[in-house]
Image (cartoon, rainbow, N blue to C red):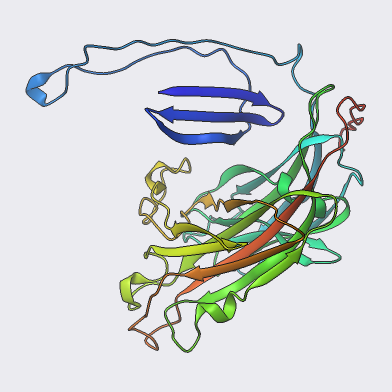
Length: 374
């Protein structure tokens, strides 16, 4: 096993290799702070209990810190939604914030979602929920999708740097969760981390294009997914140097739908970019490791792209540029729901954006002045 941790503003980038398998490559861990590690190994040799004997073990640890003395510049904190009640009488909570017009001096944007207990009690159920920002051109843009925990609160921090093009100037924010009982007190906070002096600038996510968004019914031949996922073509600008497809999907609905679709059914999907197919299965297998624990209900069970009490991570595909036109398609594996009409339709809730990048400003520009919020 080899683990490499690179400290960056706002967290750390992780590379993890097990044998010859690359498990994580430049995986961003939000909120991690530099520390001096120590190597340790725990195990037990007991052949009578069926444990294997370890007879060849070596552990090496090397600290390689290059963080400037005093750490990185402090982030700019911007409160988007400040302790707003989300319950049966208020499915939508809102707020507004003023963000910098120019983000060229910032390395990363993190968003923290906090759910606190209202005066009564937490909602006991896992609910589908979203955080949006309003954009003049695109309308509502989904910054984050999450599923509420069973009868508790939690705090999550996620990287939203790819959505920076809709996070400038005066912005309206909205959190939506259709709870029908008690709920949560919701806070949404943005932290903008300045790029350290002399650091190489990252490519700038300067443009966002909506690909597919909404509710896609699955398993009904009268409503084929191909009708929802119409082929798309986006024209890159002359300054475009890279692109990424960022897709967030969660499956909902269960018995009497065939195979408990779509919450408890794995389903293959294919994203095609300029004729190149990228395949993936919508199925989350690590719910039992959810840090929002313990909960009530069935929080440990695997599901179609989500877990109770957790944020939904995007499926990201880097797009190789080959000319101005970027042709995109999305298709689901064949599935027919034999239980049609017995309950509400199983569906995939979809949000898919194309992020376009360009070269950022040259390194060495002055770090923006950070003003504390009131």
